Image 1: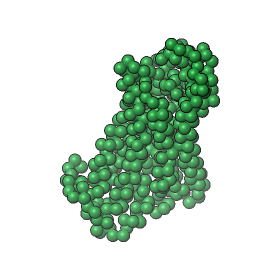
Image 2: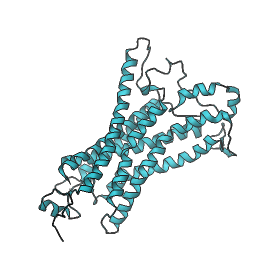
Image 3: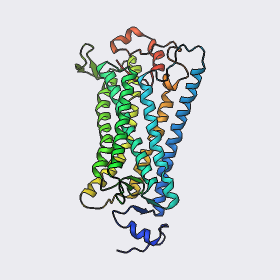
Image 4: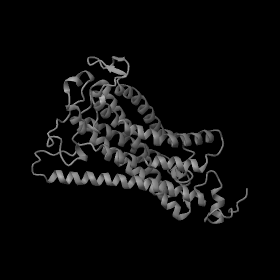
Length: 377
């Protein structure tokens, strides 16, 4: 095996480090100039998401301070409805995922990815962030589906808080168990893979059950909930108000009155929709790598494909922040006023199609305040 460092490759490792990096089980990866450029792109995507998420947190803190200082407030709650808890969980996870991507700057500076404390920290932070983004997104999809299809929207903050808390505990437990059970000198549980640090190739089961299983579950849940709700928003599906499991299929209803309910039902589905768009490329690329590794071959996925898919995935935090700021939900964490102070009912469900004729012009007025809230029928 030729261990000479290629000329004009941009590699700054010593000959000994480069020779060690050629071993497939090596705990070091020497970066070429092209690798550093690719990492620059992924870290910039993560930095963009981090800045966007921090801006959302600034808005939350500003609004919380504003509401707490208002003397007219009779009673103030941080979380006024389940969506507040879900969105806070989503953006905390987005922040962790973005921090993990920004940590790639370390490898660009040193010219090599090497196992160690910093490497382990990056792998753990990324796992905590990425898996919790997936699970929280899946919960949002399920909440939306339950509220619309079953007509029984979950309005309990305690139940939602318990669900979100259990999800974070499960992810933390999986991450901790993986790091502790596979700890040891030379084991390299968190190692170069190969351009950043994550769960190493010998630990395929931990890769799948500790992270990718949740990605794919969220994809399936998002697709399974989006299709029927989209058809419902078009008027192709009509629910039986007495029995949630009964429905009829009909021609699309293009009446003007359905415009508001369509917008409300699809707004929250945009979060799972965006997630599907950003996770699909990286899932396909890494699945190809898994198949090659299981077949006894090394991972021959083109570096450009890996960097492009990870950069797209790293933009999920920015996409979620833009979606939130665009829909501007007038509730809880993201408004200066409580819903009671705005003169709004805390949980006014969308009207059924047969009720639109009697509601008249009130639809457009209510619609402005319902954007971004978890819908129900």
